[in-house]
Length: 449
Image: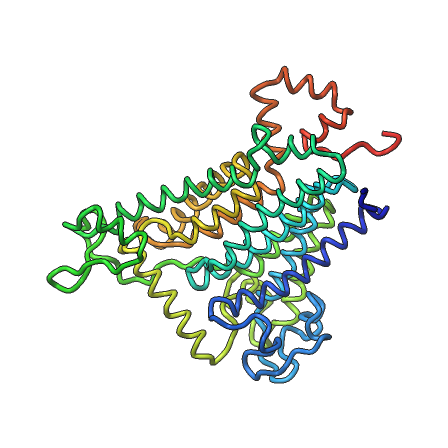
């Protein structure tokens, strides 16, 4: 049976994608705050973390309520973190860009792919902020990413079988005619990061004189490293200099950074008008947060800092304990006792490989590695430190995956044209053929084109 896809203009679908992205972003704020603290995601209902004021429906409209409340609780008037607004805005903008990049009008398989990929992107955003705050990648979220990747192939296969479009499914979602894209991608991306994690742990977390089998067992069981006669576990290959006592660098996002990402996501869709997604939030920040004792330049400088994008302001002992635990973990990472990469990153790699496939998965890993190297080296130079310090890798994995989701197919096709121009010329000659357009990731031609 055919699916009755509604005949709506593309602009309305972009708006729908943007609105659902904002709604999902609002829920992500709840996940980011509650999940690492072990709190239930739906009970109690949304409330102010300072005065426990229950948030009404009109106070919970994505983007608009935050601005109408002037970034303050309606009851106790305490400031609300700008993270809430920025997460909602970027999720909405990225979903619109993802729709533009993936969906071919009224094609069931690409629509299913968009929905599943957009949900994985939402999981990534939650993981990014949780990893920045707590150095954690919760199994609940990484498992959802893997399930969405595998589920995408299953649902697309069922729809293709029902609609008689199995050939399109086989071309885009199967290797060798039988191996699902998700399984191949998960094995490739996840396997590579598992090897990095395994050998990195053996290299950096092995204590002097510890048998190889013992450190391998600790990798899989999370046992504590054995102590030396002095009572301290010395880890890493021939550490000759004491660890620094300075606070390790911590990554953080500013409102300006997140709004700039939102603007960049909208530029391919709205051209020059995409700059409004940076200019309007900056203007709102200026008029809402400006204090009487500061100059306009100082207010805009705060927009470019991460002062109020951390954990929500609260007197909760749980939040203070979580922040202290994260700082302690960052200091421990400098000694090498946690290895080079956690298994949480490996589990996330399984999900990213499942949704991207092996080719785009490897592309996203290359981008993540390059970004991580540049940022790590930049932090080391800026703070006069050695390169031995721990920073979360999830934000870089997310950046690489999101770029691959939106621009990966176009980049791969450009590479094919560069390496094999004869084949590219043949495809250009047949550019109007539906099969060629599917392979190139181009939308079908509209009547009259």
